[in-house]
Each structure stands twice: as C-alpha cells, then as structure tokens.
Length: 303
Image (cartoon, rainbow, N blue to C red):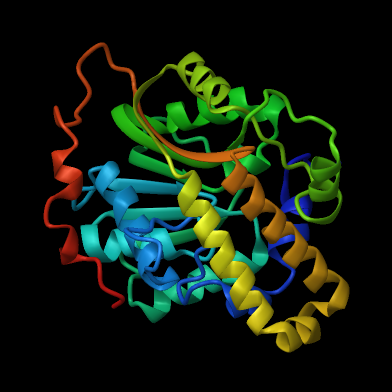
C-alpha cells in the first residue's frame, strides 16, 4: 500500500518537469522563500542570501556532518559543502530532483563532500549521526498527524546539542481547514499538503525534546519571491505550455499569484525555527546573534 505523504504525492508536484521549474526558478533551482536585503534585489542574489543565512544560523563548521531533509535540487548541500567545508547529505523522494542533484554534485566536483539519496525521512535510522540538520520548505508535505513523528525522528538523528533549522510555511488558523483555497491546493498542486500555526509547530518541536533557540518570520520575503516566480513564468508562457500544457500553466500561475496575495495579506506566514536537541546543558550557540551579520559580503556573490 502506498505510504501517505510519500513518493506518489511528491511526484505529483515535483516531477512535473525539471525543465518547467528551470523556466522560472533561479539558476540554482531553489524552490523556497528567498531572503531579500531590499525589495529591488535580484532573485538570484536573494537566494544566495538565503542559503548563506541558513548556514550561518546553523553555525556550520568544516568537517561537521550536515543533513538536509527534502534537499530539492541540491542547492543547499552544495553551498554548505563548498563554502563551509561540511560533509553534507541530502535526501529527497522526488526522482527528478534526485537525478538533478546528483548531476549538480558532479558538476561542482563535490563528490567527496556531498551525497544525495533517494530516501524518505521515515527510513532514516542512524541515531545521533549528524551535527546539524535542516529542512527547507519540506515539512508542509509531512501532514499534521505525522508532525510528532517527523520532529521525533529529526531529534533522534541529531547529536546532543545538535542544531536543527526548520523553514516552512504556516497558516493563521490552527488545523488545515477545508476552504476553497485548501481544496484547490490539495487537488491540483499539493496532494496531502497541510499547514499549521507557528505556535503549534513550536509546541510540537518542544514535545519532541527540542529547545527553541530562534524564530524568524519571513512573510514579506516569500511575497517578493512569489512575485518574481510569477513574472518569470509569464515571461516564458509559450515554453511552459509546450512543456506542461495550458491547463498546468494556468494552475501554477493562479496558485503562485494566490499564494503571493495570502502572504501579503497575512493569511499565510513562513518561519525559520532554529532549535537545539536538549542535553541538560547550555546550547552551543553564541550569546548574541552578532555573528550572523559579520562579514556578510564574503559569500554573497553570484559565483
């Protein structure tokens, strides 16, 4: 029997066509909220900002073992290995993403530092195997009933005092209601996808023995990101229709435009939650956030 919130539902969304996503994503194929320093910054630069912001929040150090759950097309694991010297492991259950990410690792000559695996997070069994873990734009697919298991597995995979960054979309009302927009999303875009409030997410993480260290809201950033994506999709109308058909083009344009409006109006939010696996001691984090913003220009170029 197919596993719910598994490969079949992920394939529905992510395996539509790598070429389709390439029409409107940035060159690194990053399909999650960018991080803008100002509203007129390019999408390419804002996505580099986001990758580095995550690495800095996790305080990645050379030689550490780093896991990215739902690694997408491989941008974060490659960035973390290249710029921070970690041993990075990415997992995805999308065949198309897996193939692209593996090719990207070879293209960047990172085979000694980065491994990509076609694997469900529920199949990970190594206890205390990683120093740092991230999950970027993935937990929306987990399903509300599965969130306790999801956070428990992540906690078990971390070493004591290990850091976990969960980056994901939230809603302003608890429980995934059956309204027009949610029915549209589940039928045409994200089967099994469900959202919760940030307060419930934090509570579930605490129940899984995490200590919340930092919470950052990125709602304006995702509205800007979506506006970039819609504009790029519209610019490539003919190519998109040739790849996925008129119906899918219209669904995606409507979906992303509607999401942009929801972020702009505050019905939907997005948060990066940094947490520590409890160890009956102080966390390894610095006493202030100052290190996040020192020498920010060292990596923030489009190379």
